[in-house]
Image (tube, rainbow, N blue to C red; front, top):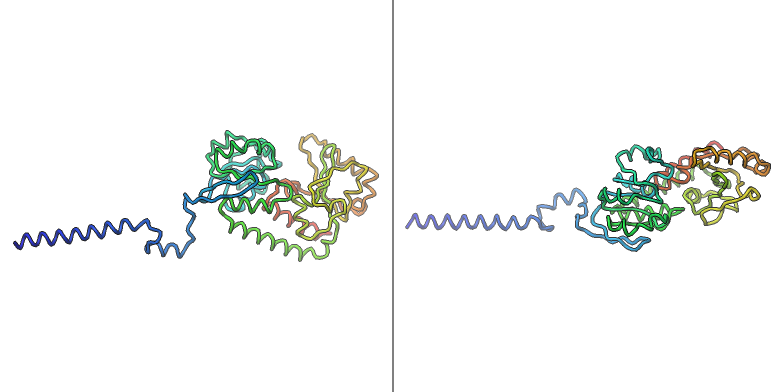
Length: 336
């Protein structure tokens, strides 16, 4: 009897141990488990891979899970945004002044060394994009070549489009930050940029009262860049005055020689778009600057016309270029 009773007691104890162990195993995955509390108190949990968000944009709305890591960027602007937010795109279209074999602007070249080049902004390579298996594609409705393949891109991965480029880089940056599930980081970067602007305004002082003209020369065409442009937005935030002909909330205005006076100001910044590489844009610029009408301009008489880097002043288009542009403006005006 004693042996039988002992066996029964041991069996009951073993069953109790197994029951407790089994209950403990079931509790482990619970989000309310006390064992997970210490980890939660030291770091902010990353969104679950299955967590779904809906991002509204200019082609509708897109559902995105978690925090994307395999990102494709279809504009120079979005490429800079992704890099600034700490992610290297798996692929991107060539930078605005990039070319096959040398696709990236100098200030992002090192960070983009492992990214796959995907054609240009107007004709992204859809098949190559699909082969990269992205989990997010960032593009723009402002490029017809992209709008035409939006349905194809959306079938590959969640796709978010900005409305346009021109002077909307800050608005677009906020959209990209949301799509990347990095809104807090994006807000911090933009706050830092705004502080950089305020610091620059302190250095510039009354020089912001000078009327700044912004001009591009290409072969056969002279273009005024108005306020709704990348550089126009930065100049406006810095508080600079613009000539009456350019103090307009629009993108651009092409002018003939007869209207050359509209490119005048207290200072003129210009770039030469020699996109063909044959020197024709340089020749065209020289012709304009030798013209008697140009010689009558204040910027000509006072030697206040300065050639600038188009990457930084125009086609870079994103937050990284904006930071460089502020630095360039401050440096140039420190010498005026």
